[in-house]
Image (cartoon, rainbow, N blue to C red; front, side, top):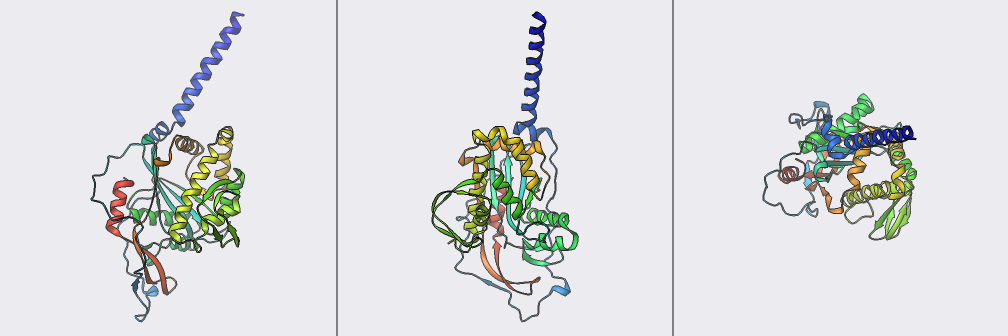
Length: 343
């Protein structure tokens, strides 16, 4: 009898030690503090806006015409404040959503940068409009979502990923440590895998992709409807900026669904399935579980959402050789946003 008690006590001790080690390994602050952060992109030297000779437009083409009706994405700038010291565990993660299904050359339709501070249980999200005007190497001033498309055409999917990440790093002048890239089919499959999501729709809207209405109120969205929701901008009063706000709603809904009590036992399996549905990521399984743990302890005010400040312009594009609509970043206010929220 004593021998069984000893065996039982030994099992309890080892189980407790194992749980302790697991806690120490996956607890967000410890997890990201114990590992060296990868750097998939760091700000490069200034990119020349001079176009290659073969890309230059005829002198008669229009240059830039400002849209006086456009408003800035942020309120009037506040006085600069000293940036708070970086936490050793803080990192930047980039979410790229491609406007294609598998096997197609794609542009980055969704560009979302998350500055994660596990030590403070905070996440600052910056949405980068896909029409943001930036200088790209060998191209000149064009839309930021062209970075992935052009590079993928020349060098394949990996080249497209690197170019898109580098373009965001250069725009915000910050390093990018992690990235997640998905496409239409991966997004739809993942939402269906977790059983759909619940989103509050403030007013009736028309989903151009599915050609169906989406009524106001609390709505349960399956994968296809969720995709149509995050892609819709034409029927929104704020256009693409309204669409970016809807991206945030979907992210919150996904986190709430994954961390619902009835889903917690399924979480490891769901996160592994999520990785299968992604086109590409450098996050490990343990990284994803640790991030889910981090989000579980967050409240609404712990996740701040912001958009790139700037204005609408129409300018000649070196790729399509005709005028296009752009979002022109306000450089000074963008620097302030980065100093206060991403460093």
